[in-house]
Image (tube, rainbow, N blue to C red; front, side, top):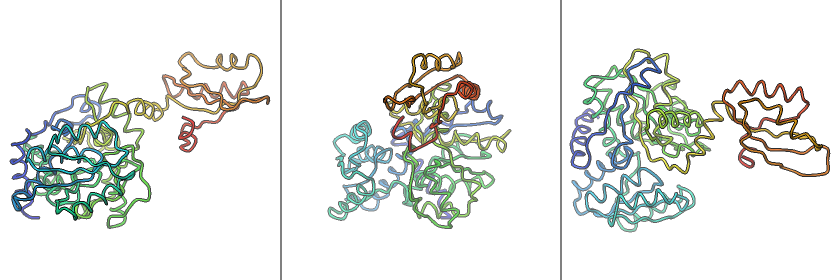
Length: 415
């Protein structure tokens, strides 16, 4: 891939007919917090609010250059890739057939249709993505359409590399470190392939959601390996298996360069960026910023670029994000409380609460004639240390309780 940088620059130049370069903005808040010169490459400000438009454009551009009569393109996606493909189908005036799982939120289906307009047909097929993908690929074989991979394609990787072309030009110098979110690996493969030639001293950090560490698994295994289970909360990056082509471009990195970001902590970063900076990031888009905490000792005094990869956040998810953030920071907990079945017991319990302790949920789980009843109670406070004092007072008063905040099984059914 000795000519890769040249191809990436050609792709970046060609994209200017579709959209301007996304901004590279210094973030004063983060720079002050971490004692570094921190810049955000704002892919959340592309026309489709993610970098996926780049790979879709470049792949489609090259297919049409080689086979001008190719007029049908197909993809399988429930998110940003679908929107990028739809937008570019309309730009080139070709037909796009986009397969999405039946469970795809209506908001994402609607946005994809808006971006593609009359050039796009959306087919909702399959309860699971694997079924959707199989249907899309079978359709391609039937009608002779071209399948657009979300990441594991050389032309897509080349298109995503335009992120690096832009940030290097905009910064005017080589950054000390670039922090990249990783799902299937298309973005990271493209950026690394470009900068390792143009800025050989630049270091890289790769961030995956803890529930979808396919790159880390591949690095440890020496080859891509399918994860048996993933947490889909970070839906833009929770990929069970990194791409073969993308991993080939990343092969040789150290496991120490891969950071697994805990899903609940990502929520605290999303809220911080929203409340402090007014920047709306989806969970995958917040990965690179979230990793700054893990790298704080290494980046002091350095120039760091975080790629904020997407901002397609459905605000109906905001209550869940807030809930996860509160639980991560330790200011909200859930308990099964053993409540005596006698007059005055509830009042006694309420008097035990501190001045900053707020009852966020209170629900009897079982009512009977026994001496004790079970209560699901959620308590929110201002400082995590308040719980140490509260639990001490509960022990002293003889109230039995069980902390179920981190019990995934009980939380799934009760909270």
